[in-house]
Length: 240
Image 1: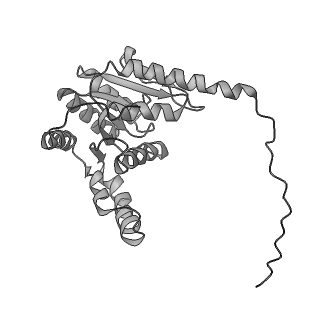
Image 2: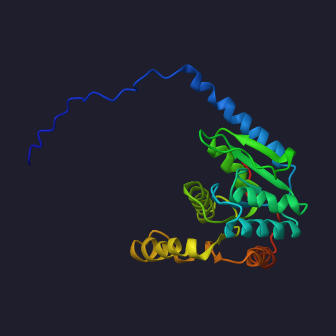
Image 3: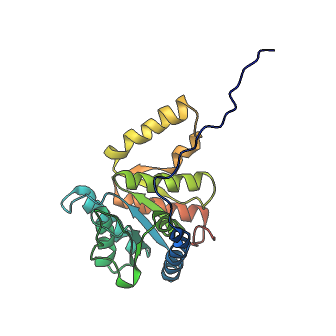
């Protein structure tokens, strides 16, 4: 039997460059306060659809105008609209809801370089968060569907968070619709060719979780057809 001659001497461990403050233990109370405020506010809001997308999209951009139209159509169907509360696609979603008499919810996040909240949020339905993970809970819990327009890392984070929750059964299966075929088709193609077919890291049925469209009308038709087919009651996605 070969003697591996293992060196069992302990190596020095890395240390924090400065001592952690005891006040970090109190962070939990800040987290709890954000959860409480979010639940108390959004429990009074009816079924909604969450709209994701870039904060950088300008009002003259076709995707901005498309987001306004989607929110308007959702309002006509009786849904409230939830966005991240900032500029760009988020502003467009709130604008479409607000201008056409719908519920307009804004879940803002405190960031170093962005973002101020837009002016189309209902004043009693505006929330500002310090923690991304608390904000995500609010995005997901009260949404009967998710609509993702083109965006950056934040949009991808929100999209894949929701896809993972549905895929793993942590929340009810709900429509997740990608708007903008030119933008999303390459990503979905990579997911199919590499993630599914080459590496076998997902199931083929997972591709059905994210239909792609360029039509605001199709977004609403897909949501309506989903709930009509399943005869689903409109309830929050989960209980904590």
